[in-house]
Amino acid sequence: MTLDEVRAAIMADPENAAMTDSGWEPLFTAGPRARVVVVGQAPGRRAQERGVPWRDASGAKLCDWLGVSDGLFHDPEAFAIVPMDFYYPGKAASGSGDLPPRAGFAAKWHPLILGELPDVRLTILIGAYAQRFYLGARRGATLTDTVRAWRSYLPEYFPLVHPSPLNFRWQARNPWFVDELVPELRASVAAALA
Image (cartoon, rainbow, N blue to C red):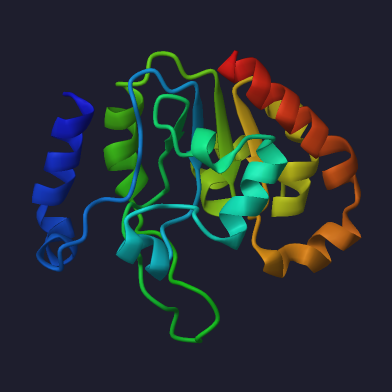
């Protein structure tokens, strides 16, 4: 199944009918020569409406952490952007953030997409949902524990916190992230893209 066929199958899936009927396309980008996969949670409302993931303040911060330009990050032949759900999940009832990605979505669609990406050298796992799915019992007790143990998941995976500007307090409490992890992340990304 080609990437275009996977996209068509996602859109035709009855579980995604409401999104397809709304004119939304599944928000993932991937090219067959991609070297780095970025797995996040799910698109935000603006990303879904614009049809472009990570083109906001969080995306700018993520590009800085990765040591790449926005143009390179959005080149599907370099980076595949494959969130845990390809559609905006809606607002949480509490009003604080978005709903989580739908259960079972990644298990159904990620293998089909990743199966078409034979040159992937590094998978970046942003947030607890991606880390739980890909690392399973290997992840730490908390998100911070998992990210702090990044070395133990290399060379295949690199766990990160979300690059949201709202995470400034977490970063202030964890200076090792910028001092130690970010330089290693940049080196790993550069090596994967070389």
